Image (cartoon, rainbow, N blue to C red; front, side):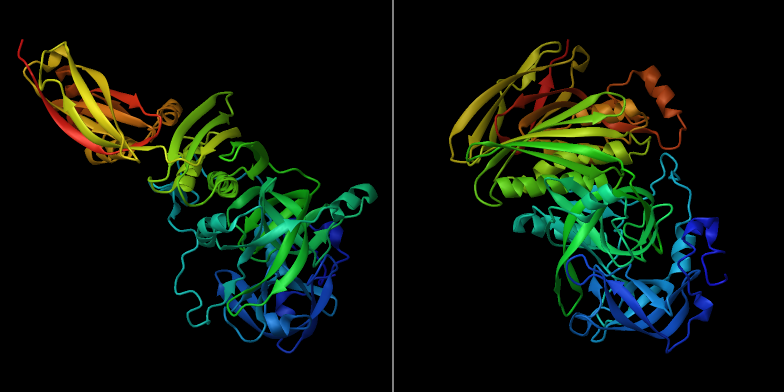
Length: 598
């Protein structure tokens, strides 16, 4: 019985005792066995395995078995992306899963994760997560042009494969159906930071899972292709690998043999898959895979692989996108994205980039108007909207980031995770560049009375050179008598940079501040006007900006010792307004006003 599953952690596979395990301490160089995987379609095939050696302690508390593979297309392709999890048997006993490879290797030599380690490392309680305010995963950030990046990078590229000597986890191919070449160019580098490679994909139509639902037979067996669905519905992004073991009694599934996301407890849809083709590459060969039906959920993603259960539904966030195209007509997209602090914002961004690049042209003059409603768990709906036009950097990525950035703030803020219930996006597009530039700004008079108003005039020039003039009345506080004030007239990005330099923005400390920050997002279609007084005390207290503090309040603030939650500022924003422009607007000017003494 020692070769059976008895003795593995927690008894998770006690009912699967019909599957014998080859313990690591019995593995010897020269042993010959067989692996199982799918090279084409859905039929599992065998390939040859010869044990080369064992790397004890290859990683902390772990070992890797080196083996030479043969058979099928492997002499031509080498170890392929998508083979991760392919089970290896010696004398009928399960040794482990193909999981590692040498980039650029001329021979199909792989690293095998012992199955006993796959069980031990994934035997974890569900629901364990990071404490509020503790960053357990990299933060997703967006540049002013909407380009995403991670801080820190989840998978650092450290001289990867420059000499091909590093034994690395086989990169996970992500089968992408509905992804245009333009979207692929934008998204591929982002997913590469997560250890994934975008590849072509499709839908299988009728799937094994449909038949399995009628017969009661498991849709998976060792060696079957299987997916982890990041985006489902009218657009699919499905990470693909191979099943290592299925416990028929419990419905538990083991796969990959290395981390997929490495995020521990997860809830990612498990999906049936079909292998369409094998593509040989000098770097990393890969399988082209199509997605089938959802069949379960992945629940654990650990150092030695992923573990899930058949017949259970994963938590997802509905994402509906309605597009009124520049060529007329309307198209609706019904999608579901994984519910996770790191992945949900990225996947919302990816879905919008994919849809917009498909519906609209990736280059040339165009304007995209986008509005989104983000439902949160307490029943509220948060709304954002803006205009994006060519002439401004990153039209498609900027529009996508407008939705993804607040989702990232809701799920990954330092206060508490705010669950997202659903997301609805409305897009309208035109093939005209509705963009304007602030060419001039002036005051009817630079001397004003306290308690009165200053008349601001601005000239906006459209992309064809036509100029239009707008006016705005700026109220002057009575308390500003005898002061010299500054009037900032600027686009959203310039105001944001000014806030950054002046330290006006603060880290939120309450959920209500997060909601306000989202609802007050600065729009590219607005020209902001800000009246600033120097020498007038202001402060950021507990993430809240407090302008023009009276001396008594300033005294209290200066004595505050709440560990960096309080910060005094040298200037105060006395008033802020804006002009709505039916276009994106760029440019900034700074004017000076002298307020008369009383």
